[in-house]
Image (cartoon, rainbow, N blue to C red; front, side, top):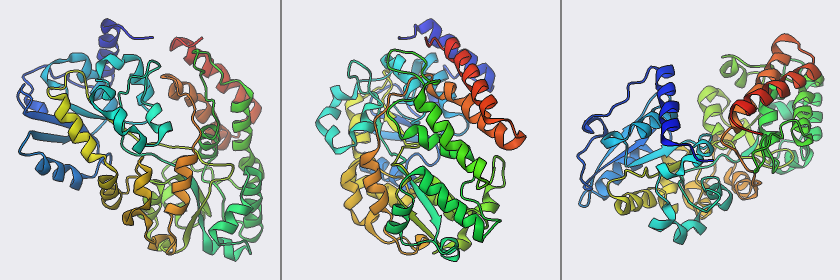
Length: 426
């Protein structure tokens, strides 16, 4: 269902009011150029692209266009939605779209150019099919060019595993933690030998990945709410297990940084989470390893570049994003900013195949590469994230307030249904 321009403007106005934004409808000076096709603007957010590669891109195309790039702070989606609704020369020629937001833009695909018309279809085989499809409308219009992905794995402290008499080699740990129950059994063993050490930081982390391991989420392709069905209940029960076993650190505040270097034995997370761990706990360098996620991989995060329909020079803009996101330049982005690419050819390049000192010299691409290609395809509706929110909130209530899991489940489903109805979900 496509939103009318009136409804799109109303939604943007509400977003602007809620966030205190000022909608710029001027002469385009803030977007960095004039109205001719020799001046193009690029919007992204910090960490979405390699700043070094963006600078190189400006030089590479300088004889053809003047590219002005702006790293936009704050609520990126809100600012983009507001600017698209306002129209005019303030709209960027090229923009990033976060992976968690792409589904909400698909009903308004007419706000963007179809990249297939510009040549994406000819090169789409270079990018993971499941990632490409998430930015595709039902009738095949491609509005997003994949930047990166977030294949998940299990990060673990080899030193704490060794102290508990558990295997430390990644292949052996993966075999010992093949299923969720196997993984929780390792947590129980860790607790016996080291009572102050926990397996997971919070149970929402388990729930998010367990949901992502399936082929169905909270809303089906016919726009029906399915968040009360067995596949979500199973993910919920999986998430509850570490809480009932006493191996959950119950971290839902700002104490994670301290815990990660001290009493968290494992982390469930995407490839980009490696940088979080390294930044928060530099003193644990060499002690961490990575292995396959229990029960298979999921995806967390990963974004796109898109061309708004007002783009002043679509052909040149497409040349720019194709160059930035080529497999070769994706290797540079990984080296510069640990941006995990959506192009499998990059996984065999030197930038990604070397040993990682923080992870004890392990070649972590040997875990994340296969995970990236094995991620299941699931339909993500525009309202999916809004409908999911009550489930993670209620899981936090179990940890923080001791709420009974069954009561929390019933409340989560009830709240999710209300949100779904307000979002037009059947």
